[in-house]
Amino acid sequence: MNKVLLLFAVAMVIAACSCSPNSSSDDDNGNGEPITTSEFVIGADLSYVNQILDHGGVYKDEGVEKDPYQIFAEKGTEVVRFRLFHDPQWIKDAYEDQDKQLYHNVEDVALGIQRAKDQGMEVLLNFHYSDIWADPANQEVPAAWDGESFEAVKDSIYQYTYATLSKLNEDGLLPEMVQVGNETNSGMVHPYGEVYGDATWQELGQLINSGISAVREIEDESGEEIKVMLHIAQPENVSYWFSQITEIAGVRDFEVVGFSYYTPYSDVPLNEISAYVESFRNDFEREVMILETAYSWTFEGADDYNNLFYTESLVDGFPASQEGQRDFMIELVKEVLEGGGSGVFYWEPAWITSDLQDLWGTGSSWENNALFDFEGNAHTGFEYMSFDYETGTDRLKERD
Image (cartoon, rainbow, N blue to C red; front, top):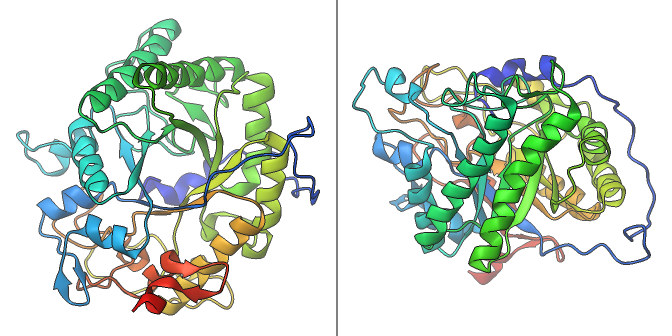
């Protein structure tokens, strides 16, 4: 999700068919065979952590400074998600320093993967196929590919995906999951794959399949299984988009239907998520995961960078408090589990305030959605990760 431009995302989200999910309880793939899912995943997008640590951010657990990757592992995070930009030179402009190191590029992502794996967590690598945030409103082609022919861009997607994963594999950092595109409601690498512009669904399908082909090539070479997922914003758009991409565009070689769920930008109530997840699982015969979500624990701020979530993000019964944030996330995970889903990822739960800079501000526009307080202490919101969804108790508290 693009932190500032998110405010404009809804206006650009496709006015797609927003059909209610069907309530069928059938649990097969249409051929009479069970739909298999992996163990449920509790995930967190920690793409900003390296940059925060380099710019004065401090993380604590029970008042003691600690490695944030260790905190997440100990609190129950199983998979860490990292976004990858092609060539984010704009970071130098944000800091007004042309010698500034880059973040969200291959080197930064490799460092994050190493830190996550050192703590025993798996990794989801999120290819944005852009130099900057890709989301429903923005899918800019990387500057290096701009002006090339469609066939050249399609090949560039393959070569870039392959080279990135090959290098990570050589370094023992191969991700267990790969996301081909981020919130691709309107397509990707515009204008080449802009389905609400001049491109067709078939052309978008060729671009996505090119990325997937590179993943499968690395999978064959490494002997390691890699789960491929596609991702769009908001559950009300899933049925239409995934029908188009599978039936019209011919994209079928992927394991996970992924979507973002942000309450300010979705018309789907929390208590209907399970029905939507069940519908997606049955209709597309694949695993279903929420790849981005968040909830506010306060509407105060720790810096002058304006926050993105305000009172309109609240759901009745879940106040903007640490307990309210925890309880919302517990209910959301329950909904996904009830629908037969396979995981929930929290977006940037560690984006605390620091001297981090981007093109829109210094600090954080997300600290009121983080799982840390304004002093950097891990807070009550984390407890949804260790909650035992079978017994209704907190596993970490029971252990203590």
